[in-house]
Image (tube, rainbow, N blue to C red; front, side):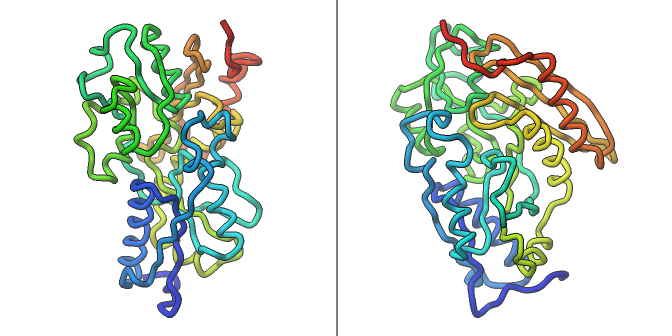
Length: 316
């Protein structure tokens, strides 16, 4: 096996959020590293770090700071040397990393689709007019209102288990979750149906796990190269360039998906008004090596179409 082995005298410390899904992703990372270097799982220590986004669950993310709320405390722990690597859901990651940190290792991407989840209905078309549908995602909210402006969207924050409990409590009759998360939790049966990208284009980097490290930690960099998935990296290069050019955050409804076919990359992108009143989409192909350039060009062209203030909330 190429790369240096972890030091068995000191467990490699893996930082993560504490939700069941975050822990499942950290354990997948640990297991892949253990298999790559023929090490016992005891050679790794999973360190749970509570983030601001985990502590404050009664307010929309846009009110308390956006995506960095799920990463800041973990990144600070890594800069202090408390942990060696951090495992993240890439759809939660800001497009820029703090100085001294780098994110250049991705695990093979899971199912990118959104799941329609309901105790009462099999698909979105079955939901009666005027019903409440829960989501904390501005992207899903806007996409839903484009399709079903007759529905009421209510705030639905929390981990998978919390949102399923809210559904059972009648806070809403339906919600959306990521199929990737349900698969990683072995809860795929929760989904009544999976929505194709044609029906609901996913969030940028949905289904992808990224592993962040200190920039000057070359031993860890070499080690992580053993589990790095290049096709996922190529897809995310295009998607995250698209997001970066749009200044994307949890405050902007943006969707994007890159797919590979031989040496060609296909990128689909969508931007929406937060109230779902208008949307612009594009679909282009380019050689894989030009994926980031394609993402930036698509973003700039969509912004020109949309005009200034497109992402602003409209008031009645």
